[in-house]
Length: 421
Ligand SMILES: Nc1ncnc2c1ncn2[C@@H]1O[C@H](COP(=O)(O)OP(=O)(O)OP(=O)(O)O)[C@@H](O)[C@H]1O
Ligand SMILES: [Mg+2]
Image 1: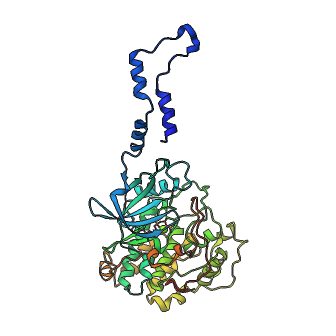
Image 2 (image 1 turned 120 degrees about the horizontal axis):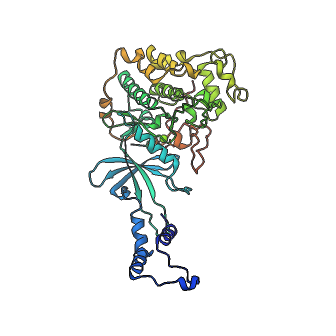
């Protein structure tokens, strides 16, 4: 509540003296009424009290000590911080309030709502929301932070470090965690809509957590519900979104999961387009031409005739990944998740049932042994690579800030290898 609002409220609640113009009807207020008027008068101390009472159940962010900036998202910065009382490590995600006229931004509210619904071992844990009192008395709005349990690494940071060696068991375990988290999200009728390596976190105990629910939305049962197609970072965006689909489902996240699974071996995003047109071209070169013969409904998509779709290309997922992955079950699962036709891509549950997870070496509980050999936190941001550096065009978020523009590929000095499949 701001001071002008509280003035209005105070005036509205105070007993009104009868109008003087009504002449003979005027009577002086009783002693009791005067006392009541005194009590409800909008004084400086009342305003101060209201201001302090604004978020009665919210901790002030000063109860955390900020240690290091670990992320720069579309919505603001992410810091590693320590709880001054308990010593617990957390990640503070600052909510950008720049152009918010209505108080707490709707996008952040959605993220909180989704996270509250999604309590799961493989989903990032929201501890609380904090606020910081505005420094200046003229600045009325506080800054808010989402407080998460701290995870030691993100997958983009891990994969960019050449000293991190992933065995087949690590890859299986990580994919099992990822698909279990995704299954939980889809089971709760939610779409993540921003699957990418930087949004996959790994704890010190070697447990994977899906993060960043800033773009997540409920699955609408009504068949005529239209979503935006400007979601999912370009490199992980499935063909149906690139062709303008506004009605889509969980399969958009499965495509992203397929890209991430391949990245565990290639160590770099497998489809690094710098425009939507280029992205479709790269997808066609790997997955074959996008034609009605393999995907009958594709002709109905809004951009099918507008985009240039290369013809007569064969699907070469197996041939291209074979020399790098050397496990036919792994390639087969990636191949399935990278199916052009979304209705044939399979679900997270089906992927979890794949032979890949039941053949030797089998997945373990966690990748704790991998974590034991890494002595420094690895994040996309601190490693200086990836989408935050302007690569991998960001999805459109309903934010006051424009999404990062796609940049021409200049990956040489970032640790990202320009592997084009
Ligand atoms: N709980 C956490 N523990 C450790 N690091 C985290 C945590 N949450 C987020 N991060 C780091 O901060 C980065 C940005 O966080 P997040 O993806 O939630 O923000 P965002 O603003 O939505 O980002 P973007 O727009 O780039 O996707 C992550 O990629 C990750 O590196
Ligand atoms: Mg993110």
